[in-house]
Image (cartoon, rainbow, N blue to C red; front, top):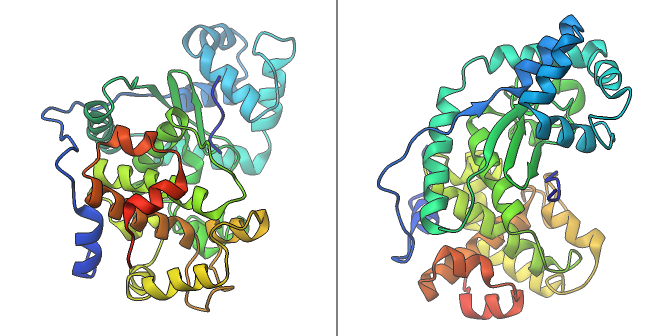
Length: 331
């Protein structure tokens, strides 16, 4: 099993920057919706009725989902072990979680919009990564646990993390800068990002900022090309004014990172600050969170313009220092 991957108007310069598409990037001619298999609904029916006859049906219809949910959320090794379903019921019967579960299934009763987006997004990935397998897509509820679950041919999204930033329960658990990403409009984008990360796992040094920012920037770059209707600000989880601030201050941000010698210093704590959703107030009071990913996205855009590379080449280039040199990034 692969590693578990733990939502309209902008400055013209920002749109131009992020939408430029090198000629080596392919565009699909035909797209069909991706059917989402509703493991979330099937499991809720079992939890609410506690009908043991449904256990065999779940094992028959969703063996891989039971396995990955058991390992990724419940810390259980196999759905075949004695007491597996008892622990599933115990976990999901907690009153707050059970109400959240029912709210999520009600909110996502129909998912045609997401299936259509996934069809377009995965068609884009397939034409640019011909050897990439398209996964079977599911939905689950994790109780604010694992957001995206990925296995060899399976991808599932935890829909309780996409209830809209005004969802009442979120007010007790999440900050404003976290809730802005918890929207239906970002569900398809997170499916695609989760699969890209599963197919192309990070191979750099976790403690080196340049390694992390380029990797995260690659993911944002590709997802935006696959789903261009999701604006750069939405994809970053920014308010429009915050995105525009980044564009206006790109040179200052880059110079600050260089001057502080943060780009190559193997300092996990410092590097994490650049990738955290929490506002990067250690740089300035106005700097939004995850600024490392945003700058990484700009570096990737520059690399693609300079090299007219295919997306396969983009993801295969693992040397961050060489990548930066070839990008000729000049904010």
